[in-house]
View 1 (cartoon, rainbow, N blue to C red):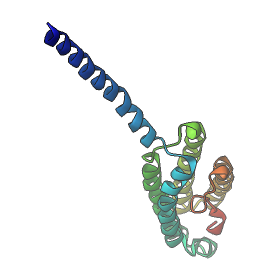
View 2 (spheres, helix red, strand yellow):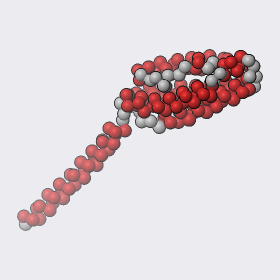
View 3 (cartoon, helix red, strand yellow):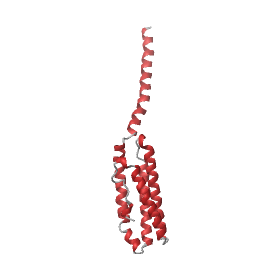
View 4 (spheres, helix red, strand yellow):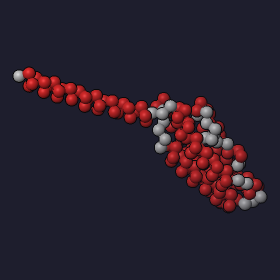
Length: 168
C-alpha cells in the first residue's frame, strides 16, 4: 500500500515539474526577446552605418550634378538611394524592439518609410526634368528627417540620425 501512494506522489511531482517548465521557458524566451533601449540601439546602429555609407557613396556630388543640369543621372542616384534605404528599413524592422518603446519605434520606422518615398519621388522628378517638384519633395524630405531624428533622440543614435541636407 505504501508503494501505491508513492507512485501518485511521484507522478504529481513529475507533472508539477512539467508545468513549471512550460511556464518558465516562455518567460525566459520573452526576457531574451525583449531588449533594452541600449541593446536595441546597439543592434540597429551597424545597420544604419551600412546604409549611411552606401547613401554617401551613391549621393556623393549629386548636389553639383543637379546644379549643372545632370538631372537624369542625379535622379537615378536618388532612386538607388531610395532602394538602399528600403533594404535598411527591412533589416531594422526585424530587430526586436523594447516593449516600452514600440510605439515610438513604429513612428520612427514610419518616418523612414516616408523618407524612402521622398527619395524615390525626387529621383523620378529629376529624371523627368521637373527640378522644381524635386526641390519641393526635398523640402518635405528634410522636414521628415527632422521629425524622425526627434522621435528617437533618446536612443542616442549616431549612425541612425539622418542628415539629407548633406546631399540636397
